[in-house]
Structures are given as C-alpha cells and as structure tokens.
Figure 1 (cartoon, one colour):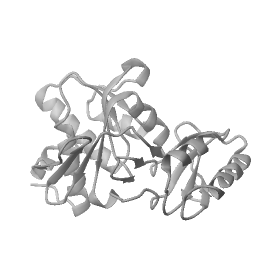
Figure 2 (tube, helix red, strand yellow):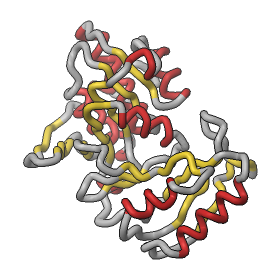
Figure 3 (tube, one colour):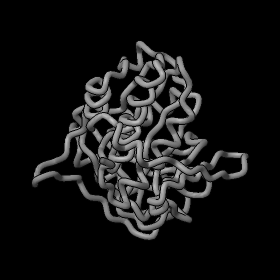
Figure 4 (cartoon, one colour):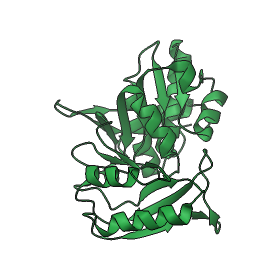
Length: 258
C-alpha cells in the first residue's frame, strides 16, 4: 500500500527523486541536511541498492550521516573524499540568480564547506522557497561562544549601515537555551525582511572577528529542482532552458524508512 503523503512531503519527494536522477555511478556526493534532504537520502539509498551503484557520500551534519549509514550508503569524511562531483541540499530561500539563504537547521557551516568542495550544487526545494529578493527568511550567522556579546554588537553595527529593510539580531534558542551547532558554536538569526545587497552584507559580516560563517550561499548553486505535490519537478539550470519532469510518487512504498 502506498504511504499516504501530505502535499508538502509529496513535493519534497518529487524534488528528491528528480535530483537523484542526476547522480551517476561512481560519483562522490555531498548529502545535505533538512527534511527535503532526508527524502533525497532515502531515494538515493533505494536507487543505489537497486542498481548496485558505487557512491561515496559526505554528509553535512551528524543527523544526515547517521541516516545515510543506517540506509547502507558509503559514508566518509570530506578529507577522505576530496573534491566532490555534486552536493544535493535544500534551501530556505532562493532568488532568480540562484543565491540562497540556508541554515534554518543550523548546519550551514558544514553545508557550505561541502558545497564549496563540489563541482556542482543542486538545491531541492518547493515553490514557497522561491523569492524575488532574499531576506524574508531569517539569515543565520554562526559565531564562536568566546566573545559572543562583542561579536553580536559588531553584527548589529554592520546591520546599522546595511541595505536591509529591518535590523533585528537574535541569539537562537532551543527550549530556552542557546542552540549549539555540530562545531560547538552559536547562531545569531538576523531578521532583515529584505536584503538589497547580499554580497556586500556577506563580506561585511565575515570580516567580523568571531563570525564563523553566514547562511548566504552566493555563486555556489547552479541547479534548482522545485518539487510539486502532483509529482512534477521543475529542473532549472544556469544558462539552460527550464524543464519539467513527471516523477512517480508511488515509489514511496519501496523507500527505506527514514
């Protein structure tokens, strides 16, 4: 019996299936983090087992690595894999230039390192993540615990002169306690509403001592796959005409549990 899918999960599955079609035997892959990426890992494991594919996978978070191992994928570190062929990951926002905001799940540092070590970055997402201009989703900034109050003050000083619509910086909390990343750092979420100059803001934030990384992914992504609840997947590549593929969502019944 086919697993009942919500509209949101159906769209995520469509995007994941389409992205996994781009994978070839022998590839070295970066595996993203988040709910859509989890669908991708399940689809990838299913296809790899069915076709006997030899893949080398580098996860972008502890939870993705755990899932991939449980599903039988060959998981190694980035140091062991070296340069990757492609990273497949989700995004919290993307604009017409394929600029992204990522980090809602708190893994954007590892995600950016892995994506930057890849020849290509494929983003799997849904129509709600497409924006004309970045900034509606809070921009995560990872900072070191040491000197955090000074770092946060300098972030606020940068925002005071930045081309943004709102200037609200908040330390991310979970159950009333500071959220800690896999690297032991903290996250400051910037509620900006609109970012008029993402490159300038990224440069200014990264120049602050204590800032480890931002959730702005600029000039890294070259392909976006947008999944729809009816099984359609829009494949958009830089410099190419968009195409639409129809994915078979009934495969969900054969996927390993996530």
